[in-house]
Length: 73
Image (tube, rainbow, N blue to C red):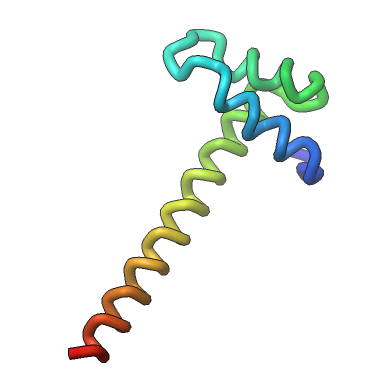
């Protein structure tokens, strides 16, 4: 999978917002909205990576909140 440009990431995010999660052709639709330079498999993998990144960020922020609240006690 090739790297993703800033513009491709923005188009990806916008496509995710408008393509129904229940659409059986979701990844093909998202790929088409990005301009056809990415395959359906590429966009699905990119989505999984995005979810993993968000989980890590969320876990980190929750951890920091817990540390901060414990120091305040």
